[in-house]
Image (cartoon, rainbow, N blue to C red; front, side, top):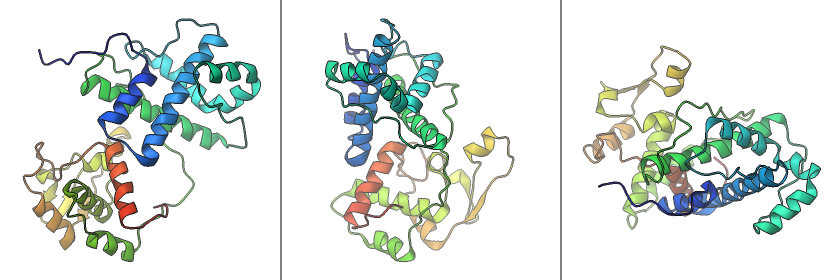
Length: 278
């Protein structure tokens, strides 16, 4: 059988989050976020066991349902205020599982709280997707038809300058071919403006007469018929030509998961001594 041996005994989601981080070799801020996410899951589990007296509330990867996700969404949004109201219980939780005490309720806006829940639910979605389809630790994937929501932002995007793009192009990554490939994908990303989740589906079929034509996933969800047509510049065409036939799935480039890609981008920017937010 091709089905891998499943880990016996341990079925808690927070435990498998560590396995996910190891599988994707996460580092830096991305790893720190997933560590915090794992702690938050454990606190949520203990909170519902202690405060709501729900003994059967372990976050078992085989038993997570859309209803459980809804409960977690509410917890992620309100953990700070819950910690303020139930300080004794959270102190007990912290001592029971050697967890840090959550930040108490502050001056976060509703948008920020919603963004926190979207962030953690997307992380949860990534872990469960990995466990279902890659590690094959479970047959359960409750996010199949679940709408996580979208990040709400009032800020304008902060873009690379021409000087920074040139710096990225000239960055010597010859000793790390994998990172060099991800740098090229980042450059193509900047040249086209595609969302990453759309970009990873692109193949030769999307390139016609020096133009990139595709149907964004967001357009499909919102029933918008328009297809963007992006004129490819000389450098974008060179990159497509350079990676022709490289990807085993016949895509334009050998893409990796979004989480891994973002982690690679951070490493690339560090090597280029570009430390500002972009």
